[in-house]
Length: 379
Image (cartoon, rainbow, N blue to C red):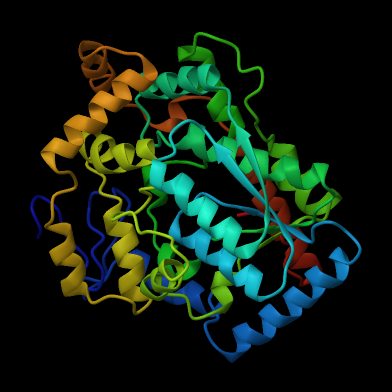
């Protein structure tokens, strides 16, 4: 036991995930799933180098004669920043897109500038209308759902795909990777891409129309983009020996500066992950992150446990971030307390696209059974 929770003997996931299961040796289902999926999703070896070379050749060939051969979303975080360095070394010509949803830290802006200047990439920054973003952010807080990062995450990916379509780009380069994100409890929240859920929450709790806020429909995300437009999401970090520490070292060599904590590039994400989630739901997002590093061999379990014993927030820093949040979204401290006391709800309390996704997966399984070939869609 650790506190009031039972913890896995191999990683540091615990029963804050209500769907966690342990085998007779005390190893959790997340570890077993990682071991099962790693051989088909993670290639930090010669096989990965071969697959990556073939993919890069395809991207370059299809992009010949065009202004850009791919598109990359750059947040200023470790994964996307390091990936930009690698694309530069691989001689790709991505259109780099940054989505400013109003919560960038000053350091994130500086880091993005360092990376783009070093790589000599074209950067397009899409600035989200703040009044719409503010209204959506407050609607999510009023809803009491766990994933308060959806307003940022959804518009980031929606904008990225829309710029890709506008510029005739077929290859979307993602910093998502199995080595540092291989473990995550799906029970904690649903898909950030679920525009049906997003609009249902906003319809109930929002106060103004979302006129310019970009969204992606179920049809676009699962049918139009991957099949009709033949767009592919490429995750190169799954095909190289990728470790956070080495990535940070290489980034710091060009003047990029570390944030000191995961997702420090967004003031809201830091606040959401380190205060809102653990306070309201008992979810500590360090657990899946550290567990991923453990099972991928980047960290010892003892190190992870020691890190979990560190406080999520310094009291002075927390007070400063709450004050900043209240000022930014224009609420008083008493209104903030009301938002933090809103009834907790699961995302499924609102209309969503889960039933459509299940139907699509059944159809996909049927096609694969008949053809004997894997049908590729987004997750």
